Each structure stands twice: as C-alpha cells, then as structure tokens.
Image (cartoon, rainbow, N blue to C red; front, side, top):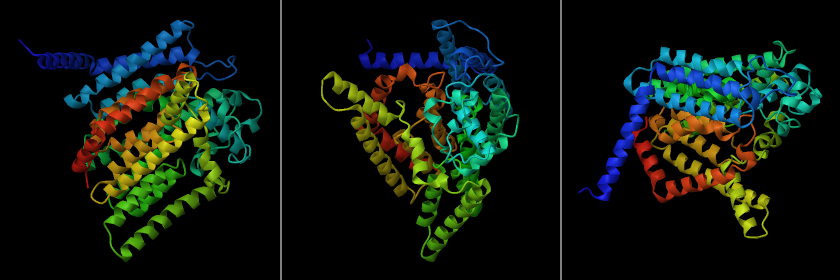
Length: 498
C-alpha cells in the first residue's frame, strides 16, 4: 500500500508528464501556426473591444465583426489563451534545439503581423505618442503644452482621458523621435499608427541583435533569451501593437551593457545616458555599473571613474537636450513626477491599499481609501529602497547585470505606478543571466499584458484589486516566510558571471 506522500508524488509526476506531452505535441510549427491564428483572433475581436480610434465612426481598415457583447469577449479570451499557450509550447523548442535564430525571426513575423495591421490593443499610449509628435511639429513645447492644445481632433479623442491634459513625461531623445515621425503622412491617424509601429519594429531588431551576443558572453542560452523577450506576448503586444517606447530604452541599455562588457566604458555610459533621455530607469543601470567599478578600484582611480561616468553621461544628455531644442523642462522634478501621479489599480501598492480600504469600509472603520493607498505607497517605496541598498552591497563580488535586473524588477513592482510593459525592463536584462530559466519571468512575459483590458482600461471595471491584492500579499508572504527570496539571491550570486 502506498502512503499519502507517495500518492501525492505519483500524482504530481503524472501531471508533469501530461503537461510535457501537451507541450511537445504543440511545439514546433504547430505552435507557430497556433500563435499566428490566435494573434489574428485577438486582433479581430479587438476591432470591437480594443483601443479603437475615436470617434467610432473613424473606421480601421482591418475590422471584421466576430459577434457582439459576451460573444466577442469570449472570442478574445479564447484567442489570448491560444496565444499564450503557443508561446509556452514553443519554449520546448529551446530545449530540443528546434528553435533557431532563423525560426525565431519567422515566428516573430508570423505572430507580429496581425498586431501590426490591427487596431491597437491593451493600451492607448500610441495615440499619446502621435499627439506629442504633432505638438512638436506645430512648434509647441510638449513639456509645457498638453495634447489638448491640438484641439478636439481624432487624435485627442483617441488618447486615454488621463493623458489629454498632461505634458510629455518623456525625455528629449523621444521628443526628437516623435518630431521626425510626425513628418510622415500626418494626415491619416491610421498611417501614423503604422509608422510608429514600424519604428518600434526596428527597436525590437536592435534589441535582439544586442541580446544575442550579451547572452553568449554570459554563457547563457541566447535562443532562450530571444524566446523569453522577442517572442513573448508581453513584447509583441506592448511594442508591435502599441509601439511602447520602452523598447528603445532597452535596446540602448542592452547595447550599453554589451559595450561595458567589452571594456568600452565611455561608450557604454553614452549609450546608457541616451537611454535615460527616453526613460529614467536607465539611470539605475549607470549607477550599478559605476558602483561595481568603484568597489573594484582604489584611491585616485575611483575619482577618475566618477568623473568619467559623469562627463560621458553629461555629454549625451546635454547633446540630446540641445538637439531637441526644448530646454530642460523634461528634467524638472515636476516632469519626473508625472508618470507616478497616475494611480492605477494594477500597481501592487495601490491594489493592496484599495483592498484593505474595502475591507475597512465593510467593517465601518472611518479611514479613507486615499489615506490607505498613500500609506502603502510609502511602505512599498521603503521596501524598494531597502532592496536597492541590499543589492548594492552585493556588487562587491557579483555581476552588475544580474543585480541591475533584480533591482529594476523590484523597482517596477514596488513603484507608485506600474504598467504591464514596465516588466520588460527586468525581463530583457535578466534574460541574459542564469535567471532566464526563472519561472516568474516566464509568467510575467506571458501574462503581464493582460492585466489591462483590451481597450486599455483596468480589468474588471477598476475592481481588479480584489484579485491582484491577495496575489501580491500571498507572493510577499511566500518569498519572505519560506526564505525563497534569500535562496534565489544566494543561488544567483553563486552562479552569476563576474
């Protein structure tokens, strides 16, 4: 007779065998076909449910009725399941050797094509980018003028309402990028969307080209890195469909790290500083590289390293600011505060604060939701600072890339404002480390996009915190109580490249 423990072990083994059998059956070209078919399913259902240009009389060229109401939502979510399943199954091709760079390129084109041609989905940010480019094209300063200065146009109506009266939160390099693209067929909103997507596609190519040699240099699988990043539902939807500018920052960050690995520190600082003129998280990577070098140096050499990092970064930042021609408004405290001023319920601190506020309201305790959310924002902020300090101490003996990736993951999770594509920061960096096999990264790469609704609004009508808050609390308890976080760090710091 088998005991309960033996029966549980046998049951787990049977489940794993069934999962592996399903993954093997779907792998290869079957997975590629399923992903392409599911991608078209997401796009066709999103022609009714996605981030449709406004007013609705503005027709997208690829728009097919797949049903209304519940039927359209059912079709959308079945397509999402198929798309994620195809990506997960294709991961078996990494282990078997079936997946190659050439097949990754073919798969990417097959999966990305429907999202390139279809209506934007899961975010309306691409309309904001177009509006900011048009502001510059008209001679307005995007750091002083909001998209509402364009008047009641199709572009303005298509932007999410929270961004219509908000100046640009992006740096000068992105401002120049939008200005350049605004000259290309600015009379058609659909044409402008396609232009921004084409530019984002080039950013993906640059990211992939830098990621492969970086993974090889750190003796991890470059194919797995490409699968985890460039084929993930998170990147394909967040970058191909809605052209999120994080891809440009990441291409420069990965390129900068590659330069640093080859001993070209000055060029690395220039590339990373340019990345920071797109989005500020790149500054964190500069800091980790500098501290990494300082710990390994002595005396006057440390002073020289600080001067070198400061001068080379300043050259890039000043140069980009001067070329953009809009002064230093982008670098003011008010500008840096803009991204964190929009509170979304998919942000862990806000989800937890909202969750406890609802509990206290049910118990008739007179504490406002605003107070609790602010409190948890502060607590999570302190946790982020503590995490960064802990990781900085680890730089004495370990690789800055691994440490930087964990820091960016912690910063994004613990920040006062989180959007799904922010997870790309850590995923792209950690994909070139031994943590490319970490299940948490795969879960984020596969599912994070779907924290938002197809139209870019919060899931469950803004009540998603009933789901996300318990998950966040359970995750924190698991990592802290079980010691999993410590074992993760110990394993990582034992195995990383130095």
